[in-house]
Length: 268
Image 1 (cartoon, helix red, strand yellow):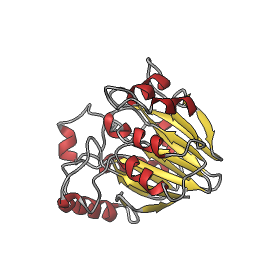
Image 2: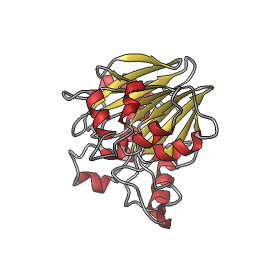
Image 3: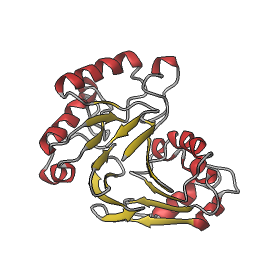
Image 4: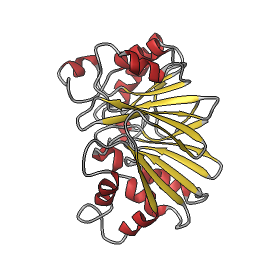
């Protein structure tokens, strides 16, 4: 499997040349296998993915949404409206409480948030609502879920093709120590893509915001025996100079790790 990075920022896009090395778009990753595409979150990076698909659109798309904060769904309308009418579309999520997945997606595609005219896409889109902790199949890939502590809730995904697996864990409140269930969920993964939004100093004044640090990501990766760690959901005010320093420290502490860069392909 190859995990393509279309956006790695969090909260809002970063702007300016000082942020170009790690990218400007918000959260969106994808895995393509033949005519099937798996998408993880649909931030502004999903609009870039949509443009890349124009030359060779997939026949089936499964979109996994960790939660519905703006930075994870801003690009969803652009992705959906770019796909051919005969593309099989499925959106998966584990939203907390009402109004439910289909209503949430309908709101994103409707006025006043988006112009009228594309809401008809819902008629050919299957909205699959899952209980947090459930497992399901998506285009031949096995997907397991785990609830995360985040304002409004969030979901981690573990994706496996039977031989390799990766864990996508963004927007989670950093625990003092990862619990047994969380360690078991990530255990032995070939790749862990983990929220590393804050420095330790920033996190001390932002507890409860639902994000983590490199130190927190390292705790889970080491406890779960993860093969490779990649930091994600970069702070939009962290410029390339700071990001390079943070990545250097991460690599020093765990060789082979790194911070996600927009436009790169991560081998699983």
